[in-house]
Every structure is written in structure tokens, then in C-alpha cells.
Image (cartoon, rainbow, N blue to C red; front, side, top):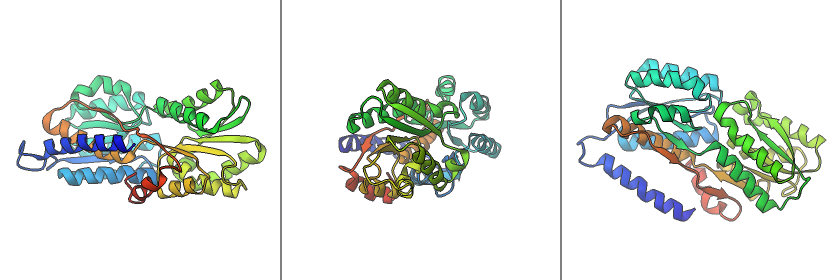
Length: 329
């Protein structure tokens, strides 16, 4: 991961050097207004890291940034987008959860008004194919691949056997976003595990503290559970609390999930979470703003940037945790 970071830093610095040099005498983002939907609720750990990255890029490039929140609800994302289009900004950065069928007509309408649109976190492949030449890009990871990779890595590390019981706590009903959960389930089933699925409710999606009841109830009736995969960054960060309340001891269940935060770092250190896949949401925020400025100012086509970097566990958490505390990782 260190090698990746050094290489990526070089690319980012080179990009910023380009957009900040004498190509124009003023900052490249000056007089640009950009709206970004950071997905979660105000103060949510994942959304906050996305927001921090976007704010830093806007400051670096001299753009004016407007941040909106959607509590991870697709309909609210659509409403936020319509509100943003009405304000006629230079660019809009969206979370792709509602899917192409819901978004594409609206994105095309925005593009026809001269508003640059790009997606983060969850891809919109049809919109990308149709409007990449107009600056529509994607910054994030492949949802299908990220679910498969996390499940495969958990299987490799946990040394499970056929018939062991696993829980996938995720989302099956949100368009492209659901591919991550489905990839987890398929990977575990192919390995011969007995897989249970628990849908993350909209209420828990918005307020992770409500997850205690769901996990406690599940484990009370499935005492032989060996593995839990959590397809949600904020819920991963609370797994230590959930398991303590359920009377589970550290390392008693192998837990793997997504995204970093100070709480997630504590859960790793306390041995309640063994594995976290880091999709680096700070970069989603930062590079989507850079992408918007580049496309709007210089007419570049949309970029397709994979921010997935690797895994975090007890072996490297001491290096990563200080950055998580700063809202960068």
C-alpha cells in the first residue's frame, strides 16, 4: 500500500501542477461552483471523509463547493440532484446509488444545460458510456469486484471449511450498489459456506447505532456463526459495540467490512474486526472535484479512476489510524 501511495501521490501532484501553472493566471477552479452529494448523513464517518477530500480539492483549485447529504437514500439523492440542477452550478458530483435508469435522463438534461456531472462511490456505466466525452466520469471502485475481493480475502485468512455459517449484512435492493453484497454472497456460497443474508434497513443505513438490535437478534438464533461480512462502512465501524452488546468475545467471530474511521481502527485493535477493505473515499471527494474542474475548464473527457487500494488489518493499522483520525483515510 505504501508503494501505491507514493506512486499515486506523484500522479496527483503532477495533475495539480498542470491545473495550477501558467496555463491560466488564475486558479483553475476560480469562478466555478460545484455541488457534491457525499451520500450519508451529516457527520457520518464515510461521508465526512468524502467531504474532506472534496473541500481540500476545492480549496487547492479555488472552486466554490456546496455539500449536500442524502442519508444513503436513493430518492433523496435524486431530489438533491434536481435541486442542484436548478441552481445551475458549473458541476455536480453524485453518488450513483439510484442507478442509470433513474439518473441518466436527468444527467443528460444537466449536461445539455452546460453542467458537468460526474459520479463517485457507485458507478453509472450507461451514463458513462453515453456522456464520457462530455466530461462524465467515475471515481471509486467496482462494487461487484470489491464484494468478491473482500469475501475471497476473508476466506483466505479465516481458513473456513464447507458448512461453516456466515452472515452477509448488506444491501440487495439498490441498483448498482447491490452488486457488492451479491458478490460477497456468491463467493461464500461457492466456497461451500452456509450463507445468511440480513438486509440493512433504511433506518439503520442512516443511523448505524440502530444496528445493535439486528446483530443481537441474529446471533441469538445463529450461535454457530463463524464469519460476518458487513457491506457498509459506518456499520463496520460499530461492529465492536454490536458484538460486545451481543456477548461476543474478540476473535470469536471473524468480521470483515469496508472503510476506515477512528472507530473502525479501535475495532481492529480490539480484535473485533479482522479485515477492512479501504476504497479511499478521501480520493473520491478530491479527485472528483479535480475531474470536474479539468473537464469544465479544458474540455477533457470523463476520467475513470479506481480508488481501491488494499486491505487494512492489525498489521498496518498503526500506520493508517492517525490518518483516519484526521479524516483522510
